[in-house]
Image 1 (cartoon, rainbow, N blue to C red):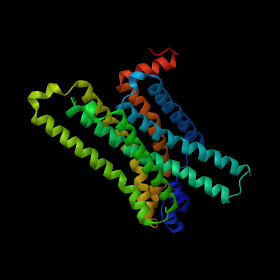
Image 2: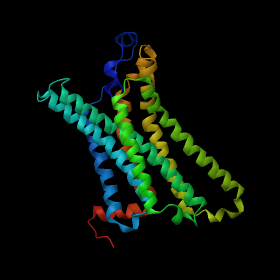
Image 3: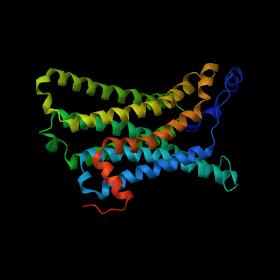
Image 4: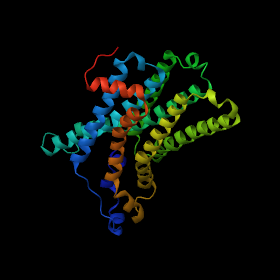
Length: 297
């Protein structure tokens, strides 16, 4: 899937020559540093939830799923850089069988990161909806058993889809399926939000039943969603332009920003843990205990 994930290398020479935009090249050290930070920060999120029994609930399981997605996106870039280093040192044969297989595996991690983020945000939105409007039945609806089943189904689908998309990455239907998941997630969450606010307006007199903590969770989701769109949308647009107008100089001009778009994706994994810490007191306390090596109660 290198023509999608590292597509600027494959931009048509005619389009590149007709465009006045030269590719923006960022130092690999920037990507590597941001990726390391993304892995470590999201690893702290996972450890905080695993070690603190108070955080072992469906909502935090879904947050862990999003953290794993972010971590896979960072891990993708780290492994890619390591592969490039070994190739430049002469330990790998350029375009050899091992490098091709390694490329496909690394690309699968990237696809897993995007798909995992999409479905994790979607189930977090559904969880927030149930928490707000079905608070009394929440614990009977969203049990830990159902949570585990939901996550297993999501990641099984993501794994299968990731491998399939890498194998058939040169086919236009694959690209369309890959990019269509992004707007579908937005439509799903926006529909939940619209229904949520309509119910809130129609039950204005009973607005007190909507606990502040639950509404705060919905606001946190909105922030996470906004950051996700800001960081991933430029890359999704890049994939569409690379597929449908690779010879157009205007498309080539936008695609010259590929490394900037890639850096935004890496930044998403770094920003999300800060959002958890800033918006969620329980996670913030867990982070403090881990940083200062305090024992959990």
